[in-house]
Length: 137
Image 1: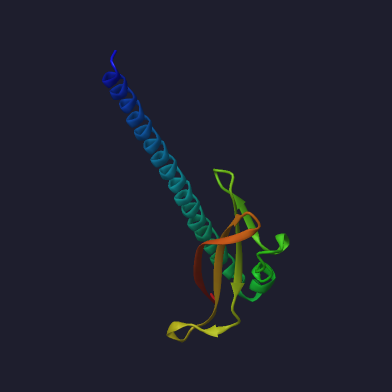
Image 2 (image 1 turned 90 degrees about the vertical axis):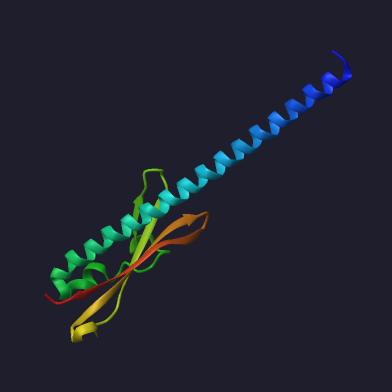
C-alpha cells in the first residue's frame, strides 16, 4: 500500500468516527428530550388527578380547609402530595385554596390552585399548574 492509499484509509476512518459520534450525540439528546417530555406528561396527569380529588372533596364544601387546606407547603413533606413516576422520578404537588369569593356568573365558591413540581437536586422545578373552581352543591 502506498502513502496515498494509507492517507485515504485514515481519512475514511476519521469520517466514520465523526459520523458515529454525531449519531450517538443526536440519539442521546433525543432520548433526554423524550424523558423530559414524559416527566411533563406525568406531571399534567398528576395535576388532573388532583383536580378530580378537589372536585370529589367539594361534596364537603364546608370541610375543604380540613381536607385540603394544609397541603400547601412544598418544602414540608407532611404538607404536600407526592407520587413516583414510571421512570422513578418523584413528583410533588401542593393545593392552595382561596377564601370564599364570587366566581363568574355570581356564584359563591373557592378556587383551588394546583401546582406540580419535580425535584432537581435540592431545588423544586415547576412542571404543571392548573386551577379548579369549587362551588357549593
